[in-house]
Image (cartoon, rainbow, N blue to C red; front, top):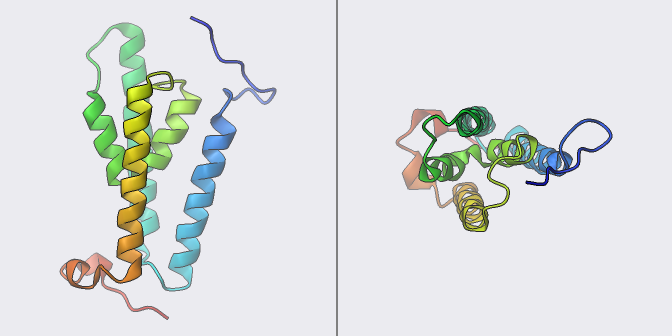
Length: 142
């Protein structure tokens, strides 16, 4: 098995791009939060889900190396769908995990798309009735 080349900074190839995509995403949701377009819980939720997802990828990679029981791919996809996709993207590149399986990659990008569409729907005002029942999401825009 051919190993991916590391960049001069010591990170696996692709990690910088994954960090940039995640950074841009977090920057955008932070700006939308600061201007009152998203509730403060949204960036916190994405950060928490990303950290959890990265940890699950790390544990799955460790299990793969030592021959232990693995995390189901559906569980990894569910975490991405629920908002952990930035952490999954960084984990895939940094840990060099789940980067070669094309069916997995396709489903991963579909979960990212679905998550971003749900976020856009929530941001667009389609959330009025749905989020009104959740105190953490009730906010007033500036």
